[in-house]
Image (cartoon, rainbow, N blue to C red; front, side, top):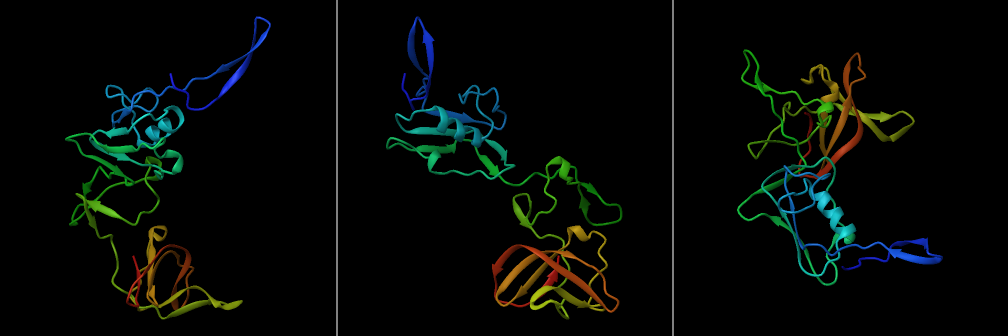
Length: 241
């Protein structure tokens, strides 16, 4: 039996004050994770693996004293993340040994931050299919990436639409509140405004914004709010997506 840390509690017994130290075993140095495993009833063995990499990470940090090289085998299949999988110094190897996470021999595990979209159905009279991605089923209310058969696909988008002018804050003309588009610019009256994103490219930078259309009698307005992503580019265009 090997102690990882000196935790314990005091107990009165037989007129004496005894220190009872809780033991943390060294345990096996090989562990297993499988999409069909269980984080609640699994023990990390090959016959009873955990279900998530996060469970393996947390268990090893809290319960196992490292006396040699340690390996966590990931069985084949898809591991869908609902939170960021992070590793810090507390999750690294100890006593001069490594902790290695690797695929089980002959199998291919996939760790993905995405969520598989199923239930596709053809649209009558149209050359495309649709699928439901409700937030109550674990889907995000908006996503910037879509992959089809492992290949990144292009999201639905408009053509490039030049903006007519900037909308400046009336109290601070150095602050831009939005972009103005001419009514004949080709900007549509979008019904699903909450799904709309404005891809704004200017001064070597592309920024993706959420959008709103308060409405103007002579000009359409897209108000810019919290930027989602910003990347340097070498062009200058504005495009709602």
